Length: 242
Image (cartoon, rainbow, N blue to C red; front, top):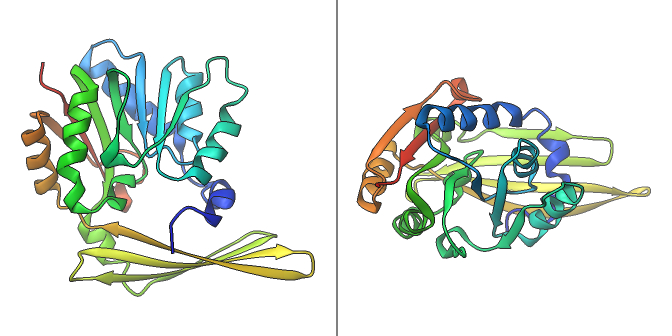
C-alpha cells in the first residue's frame, strides 16, 4: 500500500486545523533574523501545496517538489490562479535535482519523518548542493518520544462523504510508527473502501544535527515554539556554509 494516493483528494478537508499561516510566519521570521535576501524558495514534500500557494501570495518565487503525483495534481489546481505559479516537480526527496540554487528550502509538517534514515545523508547532500551559500534549510519533525507515545492509538476523522480510520503501531525494530489507514468514501447509497499505509521514522535530533554538519550545514538552531510545538513538533533551522 502506498501513502497519499486515495488520501490526496481528501487531505485538505481532513487537515483543516493546520495553521499554515503560522508556518509561513515562522519561516519569514527566520529569513528576517538571518538578514539575507530570500526570494526563490524550495518547498520540499509540498503535498497539496497549501503552504506553497501561501508563500507565493506573500511574494516569493517557489519550486515545489513532491513524490506523489496525486498530491501534486491537487497543488497545481490550487496554484492555477496565482500571478506567478510555482514550478512543480515530481521527484523523490533523495533524488532532488534542480536547475540551479534556491535562497532557502523548507520541509513542513513532519514530512522528513516519512523519509527512511538511510536516505538522509544523500538528501542533505543534495540540499547543500541546491541551497545557495549562506542560504537556509528549515524543517520540522515529530520527536521520537511523540511518535512512540502514539503506539496503539486509533484515530477517526469523519466528514459527510468520508470516514477515515487510522491505527497506529510503533515498530521498535524499524524505529518507526506505522499507520494503517482505511478510507470509506460515499458513492451514492454505498461506500467504497480504500487503504493506505503511512510510516513515520523516529529521527533522533542529535543524528540529524550530525548529518547536517557533515553535509555542510554547520550553523544550526532548534525551536519548540513553532506551530504545534507543544505537541511534539521540533523545528530545525540550518545555515549552509558560505
